[in-house]
Image 1 (tube, protein in one colour):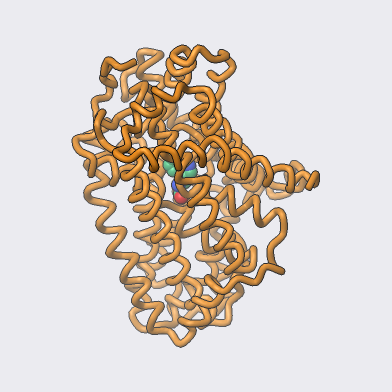
Image 2: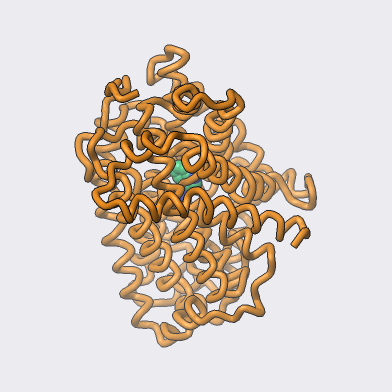
Length: 453
Ligand code: TRP
């Protein structure tokens, strides 16, 4: 595979375009919606430390590996696993890894789009002044009424799916790349504004304390799994999105260095979201552990009460939708690329079908907040089940397999050639992390959770 078979989709126009797109995929609801609420539910600082450790020791090496797999084959995840299995002379069962990624992307997007729909709806609510002078009970009422209405959720979910597919249908350069150039800088500016606002509240340091001061007594084994799952989720790992983005990466771009920038930017945004949100939560005597509704049920109280809150509220939810959009396009890209490359679909047709399937699945999440809220599997409603199965199971398992494949199955000369690191020590460090540290860590967290350890 040393010949450079070009992807039929073309390639990123520059290294920077790839950095933007991959950062766009990484930075999303995971950073701004999920990270704060699971940090709140899991007690703060200690959870954050485990999460950061997972990003460094597991996330970054796997991100390097996943990008490398995609770039080597220049094909979608399903085909990547077929080609690389062949190259390594490995067992055909490795093909399933590609499939799992494609499926995980659709599953995640199905609920991701519903939550992104909430954020879209909240732009309008912020704009029309719904939060103005509303107390906690009133804000909760707004949220409960909203998620209790299937029609409203379906409307916003549909709108978000259409927007996503519009971008994806335009292709790698005119769609993904172009929208990132616009959306990513806007996102960073908005985040900085939000942090600056939080710094003016008197609870700023209380928020910082909550985020960074570890209290390990608050950490359960499930928290550790959640922290690891979050590391995978937030870096978009373990499911082929980074692989497919890697497949559009020109040969010769240094993968490891580029990965550090992406993972670094993602971590910075998550911490910024925490720094922006917790002071506001504490300043208003709100509870950090209030679940998926945290930012929708708590922040609007602050927006409704503070000077400049009208604008800040609009800006916040606009930021959230932008961040979600730059991720959702990456979630659907593996299946779209597979339909185009392997099934001969036009990109438009691939978008219509994959978009429709995802939309339909998303109805399960919509109804889990209202008419089907009592439908439970293993004590979880459909949304919670999808979230648990994808983030806590499929992504870590996918990541584990990617690590084993890159560390043990691929030939050393091939990984060395593809990564092309200038210094041997860097390569060696990655090789140890990917072969031993990352797989062992994932394995032990799982043992711990099923109660063996
Ligand atoms: N990283 C995204 C976020 O933090 C969510 C996500 C998980 C994702 N897997 C992905 C995005 C794959 C794009 C591709 O919100």
